[in-house]
Structures are given as C-alpha cells and as structure tokens.
Image 1 (tube, one colour):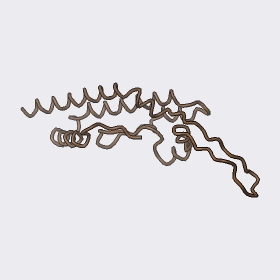
Image 2 (tube, rainbow, N blue to C red):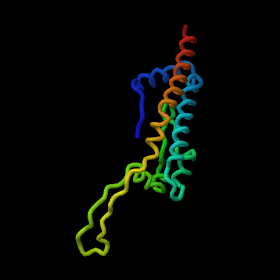
Image 3 (cartoon, rainbow, N blue to C red):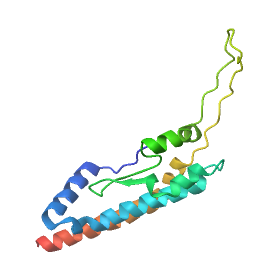
Image 4 (cartoon, one colour):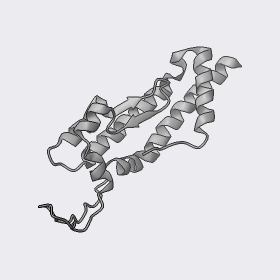
Length: 154
C-alpha cells in the first residue's frame, strides 16, 4: 500500500538539491517529520491489529516495522524484510481477506470447501485515520526547510 503527495518527485528533487547545497542537517526537520509520521501509523496499526497470538501487534510496535529511506524523504510501514515476511505471512490474509472455494472433487481425503475469510484491515485504516495529521506535520517541516533555504540564499 502506498501513499503519496502530488508533485512528490519535484519536491524530492528540490529537497535533495537543498541537502546537497547546505548539508544533511538542512532537511533534518523533514526527515524527523517522516519518521514521526511512520511511527504514528505503525503504533495505530498495532492498536488496530487483531489479537491472536499478539505477534502481529508486537511486530508493528517494533523498529522493524518502519523503514526510513536513505534520503529521509519517504518511509515504509508494515511487514518489511524476508524474516518478517516468513514469520508474519498471514498479515496479508488479515488485511485483505481470502477468497472462498467450493469442495474439491477427487479421491483425496480432504474434500471440504472453504468459505473464505473477511478482511480485517488494520494498516490502511491506520494510515487513513492519521492522514491529515501526517500531512500537516510534513507540510510544516517542508515549509520550514524551504523558508530556511530561501533566507540563506537571499
């Protein structure tokens, strides 16, 4: 699941140019805002995750559920990495549900059908619930960086 901003490529290019011109510290408010936003979504997703063994919620609260890009301008939240995907393979079935199927024909012992499992989303609602707050936080940080860069140039 991706979330983005209209004009994100252009903004990223501008912010990278500012970083190249003034150093890594110049865009640190944006990096901090992105990290804060990703943590916010991960914590909310953990609170919305269905409790079976609790492993999914524990993972969403761990540092492994959030990955900030090298540029610091984007982040991923969720089941990230090979080990986590193996251990929490069922998260996609919870988030999106499963399709049912009728009983199979044949000589095999198990000929039962499966009614399917309804979706119990936890990650997308966490993003949607916090979207306006995240947008405001990142907007403030970007405005701050652009204002500082403009003052430094003029």
